[in-house]
Amino acid sequence: MSLKNFNVLFRNYLGIINYFCKLKLKIYLIMKTRLFTILTVAAMTLALTSCKDKAKEVATNEAQVAAEATEVSAKYKVDSEASTITWTGHKPTGSHHGTISIETGVFTVNNNVIESGTFLIDMNSIDVKDIPADNEDNARLAGHLKSADFFDVEKFPSAAFEVTKLETVEGKSMLSGNLKMKDVSNNVTIPVNIDYNDDSVTITSDTFTIDRSKWNVQYGSKSFFDNLGDKFINDEIELKIDIKAVKA
Image (tube, rainbow, N blue to C red):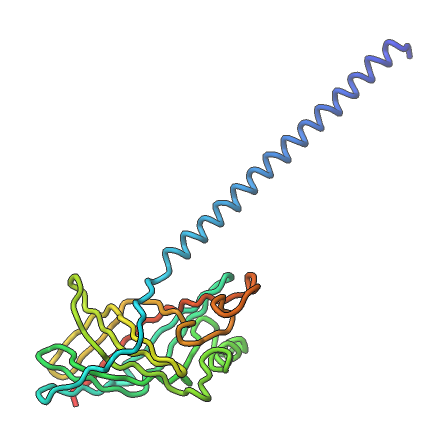
């Protein structure tokens, strides 16, 4: 082979190598761009979903004086079988939800308006609904929520709510009351729908959020611990209260 032919062949060889190098770089850049786009869309979707799903945190203040019944008010006893509280807790990797039973309670009504009332929450009844009951993780999570890390139900078996005020704000019924959990009482104002009948009263709250740190529930909370990374648990707990009380 002549030197001239060799040079031509060598240049063609270098051209082929250069072509494939550019093609490889182009493919790499396309894949990288597409991967970045997919990850960005996924992150935005997760963020928008998280924002959309979170209920509004209720106003929380210092405990107030409980409302008192008048002599002309009618008494209604809570039907514990027909009453419940649903809860949802969030963390960076997902969420859990379940129920809590209402133990006992009584309300007084005057002229179709709740005048006073109180109900007890059975903290030993904390139940997990998003994990099958026969899965050991169900019992593990429920046990952890009942432990001293969270609600310490052995020491504080009941939580309580006592009515301090009922008012209408912009056409919406707002029920205020002292919520006591563990050894802390705070006054919260909850948006509710109330249905009055001759023999019963039904109170159904909107889904709302409380900040557990205000009741000294500390586990995995950024309000109490630093350097948790993505191992933290949100302070916000979503709640929905459904109560039926029957005329005594």
